[in-house]
Image (cartoon, rainbow, N blue to C red):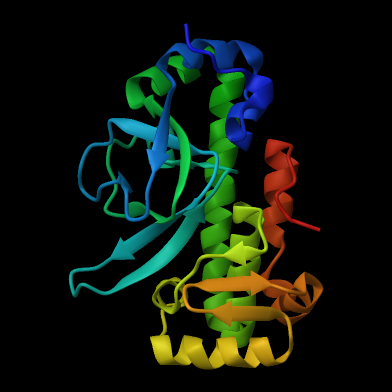
Length: 241
C-alpha cells in the first residue's frame, strides 16, 4: 500500500476526487520527478500513463504538417497531462512536455479508466476538467483574435503565476514566443514595455511578478473566465489574489 494521503496531495484534481475513487487509484500512484523537456504525452503514440502535476508547468503544443507549432494549453498543479484518455481516446497529435521542472504523480491509464468506470462521480469530475481545458483553449483563441500582444502576454503571465505559485517565473523569451505564437523579438519588446510599467522584473530566463493587479488591469477581459469556471466545476480556486 502506498503512503499517499489525499489531504496532503498538492494536485487539486486528486484532492477533489471522492475518497472512494482516491482509494481505488492510490495503489497505482507513483511519485515522479519531472525535469525540463520531459515528455509527458508523445504525439501520435498511445498513452500508457497520465500525470497529475504537483509543481512545475507543462505545455501542450500543437504542430502541423508545415512544422509550425504553438502552445494550445498548459497544465500545473490544477490538472493532469493526458486528459484525452478520459474521452476514451488513446492518443493525440499534440505533445505535452515540461516547460518548468517540477514533480508529480503518475498513474497508468488502465488504472485510471478502471477507477472512473467504478466511481461515476470521478468520471464526471474529470469530464468537467476536460471542459475547463477546452474553455482555456477557447479563450486563447479569443485573446489571439481580439486582444493586442501586451494584453495577451499579461494573460499568459497571470496564468503561469497561478500555476507556479511563486513570484518568480522561470520563463524564457523562446517559451513566451511559443505560447503567444509570435516572434521572439516581439515578445522581448512587450516585456520591456510591461517592465517599464513596473508590473514585472525580467532577467535572463526569469520573470518576477512585481504588481499582479497591474497585470490584471492590462489583461482585461482576456483573463479570468476559465479560472472562475475551474473553481465552479472543480471546487478549488486557482486564481491568485
